[in-house]
Amino acid sequence: MAKCKACGAEIKWVNVASGKAMPCNVKPLTVVVPKTGEVVRAYESHFPTCPEADKFRNKKKRGGELKMPKDTPTQVKMYGDCGLDDHWIVRKVQAENKWQIATWGKQKHTAFEWLALATGGLGYLSEAIREYEHDGCYNKEDIIEEAVQLATLALKIAYMFEVSE
Image 1 (cartoon, rainbow, N blue to C red):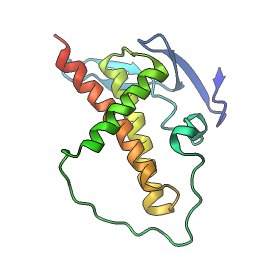
Image 2: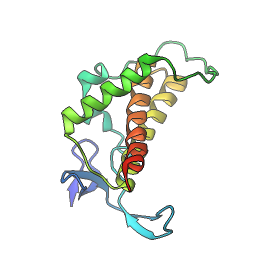
Image 3: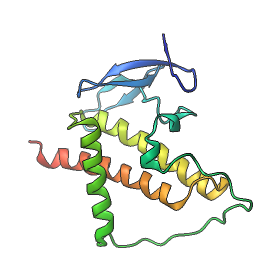
């Protein structure tokens, strides 16, 4: 059985539609496919559950190692909703999409595979927010980057359903 090079957990390499292999947790999950109600067995990506996942992330893109906790804990703030008409956020999502294509090529995945990738992204965003608000380890730029990566994946899912017949 293969092991994760970072945390040592047993993993299973699963080939996805793009032809690339994704490290997954060994224990399969039972999931229900929306709309069809079909019950299938699927493997969860190892990235959201790996305690050492940051070792595999692009450190140059992320801005280096994680920041050390601040001396004083971060106060938890409440944030208001905002309009998405600011062009800077659209440019960030477009830039992230170009970076993903340049890094991994144009990918083809099933809806469920895209959802698995987005779920992993949500895990990273959740971790960044938790560590920012409670541990003081992340900074705002890390949270923005994780949110943009997740938004890019979500838009790829929306686009897939928009152009499919």
